[in-house]
Image 1: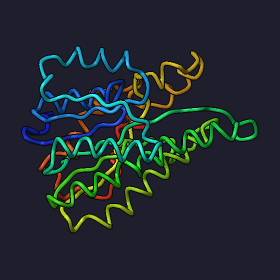
Image 2 (image 1 turned 60 degrees about the horizontal axis):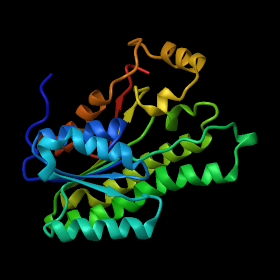
Image 3 (image 1 turned 180 degrees about the horizontal axis):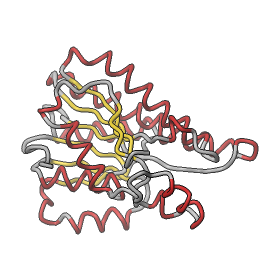
Image 4 (image 1 turned 135 degrees about the horizontal axis):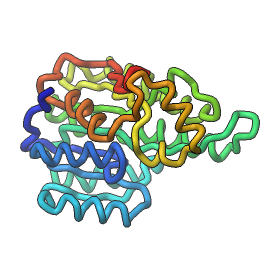
Amino acid sequence: MSAPGSFEGRVAVVTGGTRGIGAAVSEALLARGATVHAVFARNEVAAAAFGERQAAHRGRLALHRCDVADYAAVEGLWRAIEERHPSGVHVLVSNAGIRRDAIVGTMRPQDWHDVIATNLSGSFHMAKFAVQSMLRARRGRIVFVTSPSGSFGFPGQANYAASKAGQVGLMRSLAREVGRKGITVNCVSPGFVETELVADLGEEQRKAHLAMVPLARFGRPEEIAWAVLALCADEAAYVHGTVLEVTGGL
């Protein structure tokens, strides 16, 4: 299967962009010529390590520490990016996400609020400023990285499932708002992928999750990145308002 085409001359913003799926997306965009602003929340060590791995693309990679749940911080982030790129941003990949698992009857209110704030409100914050940037050029690509949890509702993940279902609703409404402006909006829904979100599962949970996957393996971050880039490519101009599942048949 061939990879999407060149992103030379494009400016992309990737949240959660220095680890896991986000790192794979950032790396793939850099490899295809894009300038990438990779956003991370707290882990400066991981961000610095990612930057070192991408030394060959150093002139086209900027690392930003920003909590996407903080509206004022996101506004400041976009102000800094647009000072550097006054003609606007072409791609937003909203990938930042956290989990705080517990059954509803014992879930702490703070864990509910934290997950919704990062996963859903953070997606809104980033999309709002991305749209404003993209409207000037009347073109753009927005991709939210969601999850099958939003449809299946895995036990112990009510907050995560609600946030991911909310991302799909946000995507569908936004798609109707901006389609006539040359901006496409879609979701990629990865299944179980070998990242930190899967690594912290217990052995029995891993076995149970693996048993659900018809392909009998977990996905790799670069496989999700391929799907994200496919939706961001020029050739995907008529793919709009949809969820692309990359789940191994889950």
